Image (cartoon, rainbow, N blue to C red; front, top):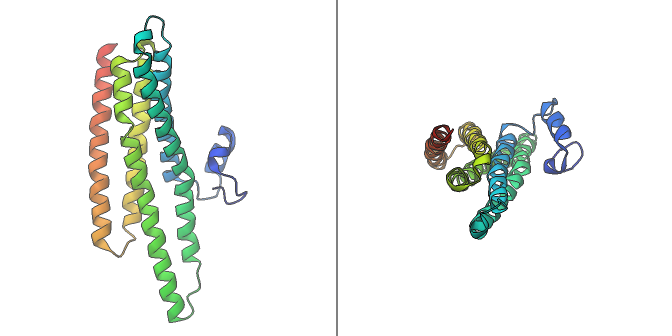
Length: 214
């Protein structure tokens, strides 16, 4: 959420969201932007599915494209929720660091709060990565069977997803570095690294197919 107004980031118009991002406020930051970029990638794949379902002469494929569009809408909605969730996670960390630390008891409470908040702030971008990578089958299929006039739109969707995955990956790594439980932290980084590699391969293949079609 936008801490200045209590309004959800995703309820802002495009100009207000960009202005909030550009302001001196540290949030929304890279994590929220990654989730938003991924939602745009999912939206592009969904758009191609919707356009293809209405293409003249393609009536027999309407159900196929309608099913893909429904999946895409769900991907988009899930990723939009993570836009605000990532900023909430960041705020939790800031609030934890602001806790009192005058006594040993207060220090212990503060340390635990910081670790809990940091873990959550690592889990959210990892979830963004998972939700983003899940969009590739939609985009790949739209490149294969979608309306040829919208092929480049689907490819831009792949570019968005790859950027989102990489951005979320960086947030996983930097937040995981603050975790004292290295077993948990290392496992999360390993999972994030695998997701990044999968994303890079998916995007490269989708772009190859796109370029060969032109």
